Length: 378
Image 1: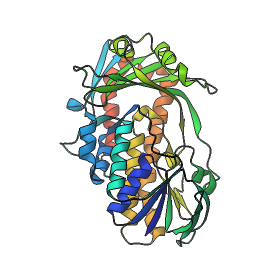
Image 2: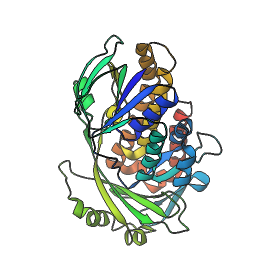
Image 3: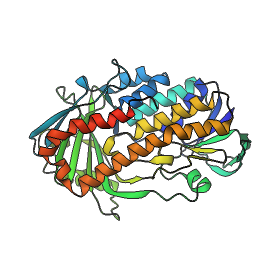
Image 4: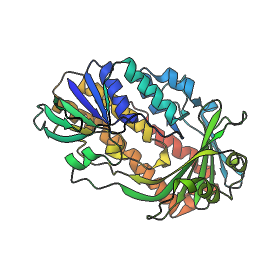
């Protein structure tokens, strides 16, 4: 079965690796002229780490990143007063950390090294121009901007939150919607004693700290921002420091040495059915870009990739395989997206659910309840 993956982010690269490991013929087209991932940090929960294990690349990820000891996240007020400690569950087995921080560029390098090792062709600076057919399970005819016209059994749209294939093949879908929040990130040297994910919660803002290697950590902050807010990259460092100037604890010492500041307006693509149409299947942010409040964006993309390859490689008809993919994936991504959206809405509106008193008595139960829903294999 010949497959075209459109997009070389986490979802697309993971899908291509999963397809090739399942014995399928696959190639990637990527709009950028080369690999150019963001250099800030990210974290993966244990359900995502389990998918990396199934892709055969968990060990290098564990070596490149930073697994949190004891799976613990201390939570404090913005001015440094402890609220509670939250422990994340290990869904991928006792030897896999519940949460791991890693630089995006490091994860991307591991994925692309696997692409090279498996001999998967990548065409840079290339996008899909036209796509025809596939409605009855027959081949899909694809033309691309490098002048090629080819047939594929199906096409995987992994081209991100502003997916051109989603706009073309699913014109009834809404554009990404703004959440009302902005996300701020920066990278800092890691003090040797800072080994846990930290979360500091204040009025109108929250700031997290996450080790991403033995030498570095990143800070990530969320603030309400007006819909029209557009900030020049040259102002990001000043603005992030201003937004979180009242935060104490470890924040001041880290901001003093921070680099690689980055800002993005937080948008989401509401999950909707179908996830596939006429030989095209949506995965990752192209299908369900999610707000960051549950920290599941990368893990959901990895789950999409692994499950899609699993169902397609079984030898049943493509139509039945994609129907099974949808049955397995849609309830799970809808649940995660809804929980994340609700968490952001509650925090941005009635903040009583995020008062120190409430968090102290309810936060662990919320985490346990959320991950209980993710415990079955995707």
